[in-house]
Length: 365
Image 1: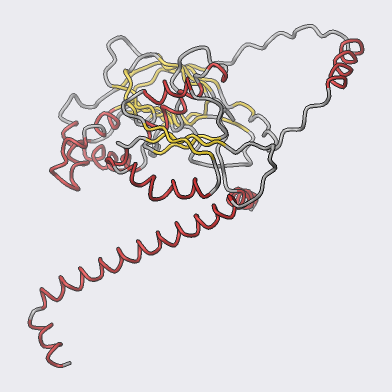
Image 2: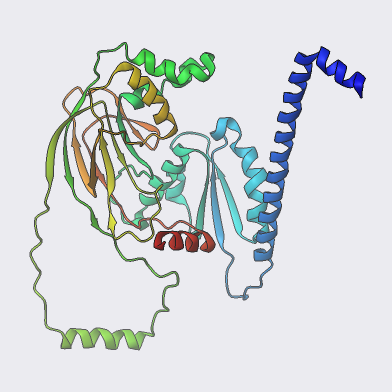
């Protein structure tokens, strides 16, 4: 034992390196072990669900998976097969996997997609936006125009423009983010983005639909109700619609962001709105570099001193020759006049009932 301690003391550099390597390896193995336990628990729960008996007249639930193999630096396919595919197949669902090969393909495939009970997206932000946009553009969804749909929000400004160039400085390692923002300050300073903004305030949140829809009454009951309502109720004259109370302001900012509240779950709120953040244009170059690193972690953060507006609908008018691009859910679009409208309860996402109950209890407390 004394010889071992003496050897460790004489070769303390190697001993320190070996201890660090051993500690890192143990932490990595423990993480893999925890991941395996989580996968096993999820598979057991899915198998219990899949073993449940269903009547012969009830069809199997259909699930359509949109998989972008290029997402997650090309690892999305392996991650899906390792983590999600076993759970889906053990659950007894009729699973169809659709792999996308190029940008915009998911939108086109959704136009041809047959009836399905649920859609699963395995990919990055771009894949999520493509699937949601394609889904809401379908003829059976009621959208006649061809808008772009987003889940997170829209960004326009200097932080977004610098953020998309971070990957160019990959050779600088952990300093690449600060380098991208630092070199962007060599342009005209301060960098101003001027526009006109019109907006409407928050709207009342629509009621939540019941989980189970009531069964449709027989034909004779529906006919009786329709005739009774026609003969008994007086005919109502259409009421005049009150004009919308638009507010307008001129803005000059280093960055404008319009964010939904999808990341801030609040099941008890009574109003629906988007958060518009107009950041001050007067900022030093050092503070710009520092804040740019923060925005890479939280793109829609609204710094102190910014003007914050709650709106359910807004129109952004840009001057001719406006520079920069929009970042809509981290996807780049040409900057042009745009109308942003909130669509509450447009999509239904699956949520664990236990997690939903916990959120409700936390909101009450």
